[in-house]
Length: 84
Image (cartoon, rainbow, N blue to C red; front, side):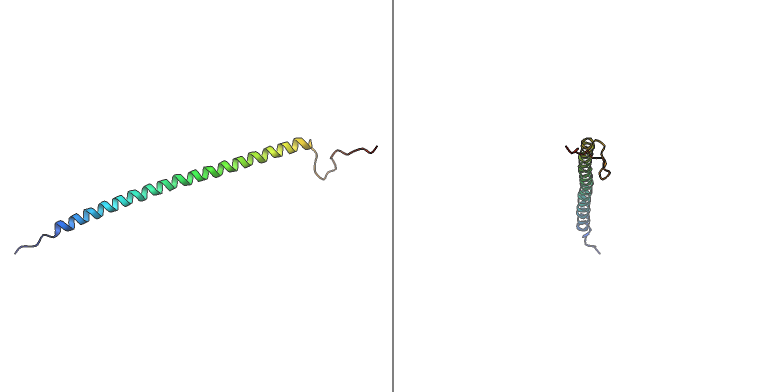
């Protein structure tokens, strides 16, 4: 009694499926890595914008302090004009 040989076709299909799964896994890994890099880039851009805003705010506060020459708002320390 002879047994028909269909195992060779099944073996080839299994190899093709394993290669397809491997390729898809590599693509998924590359996508995950690129998303990790992209999120770091976005975080760095956000931190840069915060730093710039903070620098502008500090510069404005320094010029305000310099302009007012230590005067306190609401404390009556602003220079007054003497009547003639």
